Image (cartoon, rainbow over all chains, first blue to last red; front, side, top):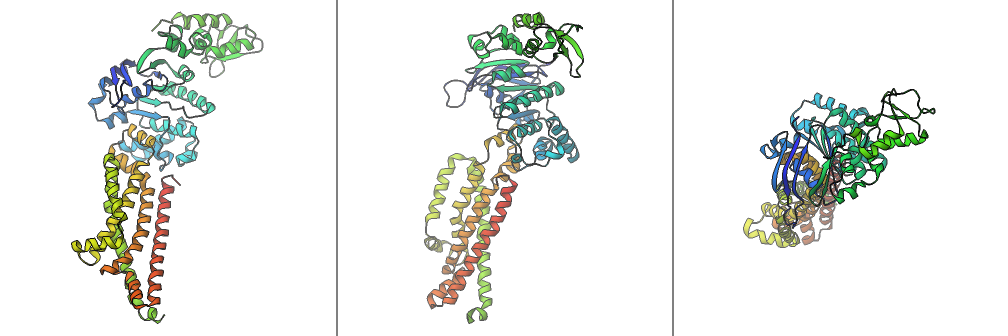
Length: 327
Length: 208
């Protein structure tokens, strides 16, 4: 499949700065993946993101979106095909939720009815009942609700790519966790290519298909979370991800990757764990079952497998099903 | 008091002249100041010198400004309008710039990130959000101009100032009082009316 975004030796030096904010970064974003740019402030992750939709222009290097150089089409047209979500949300305070969401469709000249339908669909998608929220103004929403609307607005014209710049950074822990879960669900359903910037390691490990670790404008390493954890390329990556902590490894492995065929002899107390849960949850369930095998269930509560103590121990050292090839 | 009952037509004419003069001044002044403010909000390097120049005009006493203009535009309404327009530029331009600059950068970034063109950004986001601040400037300018327009009578431009000056020269307290009360009434009414408009705009833009 054609990659969604390709960066070739991209550098950016801001006027008046001595050192480049981003230097010689090359990166391929696969279509449909959730790629997380992880780094501390000043690492260049946000600058890198904002060069994709040309909020910043690279000093050198090339960026291709769906195989086309981003400089080859008018900047407004490029951006209408890329959803953009920022930490401060930036909803238009003088427009209702529905008008905010309808911005890009309106620019694209959709008819009124199609915009209304799309808006209601998107509100449902981000779990805000349309009849309740459609006509509200941004200031009548909580921070979490505002960012849901921000995400709906970014998805309005159904762009294949979504750029998210620390979208949950300003939210309280509970709201953040809920929105992370919903983003994962949304990603699974919509198959968008998402580039997500964060400085939060936990968030990166939770969301990412692949993580790009950045430091001082350079890419330290990129690959699947378990690859980074099991073979960190630099001491910085090892320290940042706490790669020596095996519990970290368990969080990025799925129960479905290590489970065995269902058996009848389960823990007598009926402890279960979801197939899409991570192995840390599985470990917790195993502890509750005092080490006896735990039944793995799917979304409907049907038993689809079994996970044992030994499976978890083995996975912590080897990665998923022995396919942990270092990137 | 017989003056009022006998000459109400004169008073009414002067009142109308006064309102007309200030209305004309505001129309022209806003027409000049808003585009100028938009330009200055964009070309940041020009803002300080331009506002400095306008503030100099603003500090010139109005009588002196009239006197300076008489050799150029002569006696009459033309001079009055020119002087008052120049005088109100500082307030109007400053508020236009402040309103546009005051728009949340995150809102602008989101708008640009969604693919709005510069013009769409201005029309749909920046201008509507700056409007309450611009209108506040119009309100202050209106009240100031209504007061200063009284001096227009001094250079033959008409208005309620005529009553004031006549009352002063003839020691005619009724004329003085009528002029004063009516000017104050226009100023208060204008302030009230424009404040209502401003509040609506503020509520509409979510600034409250």
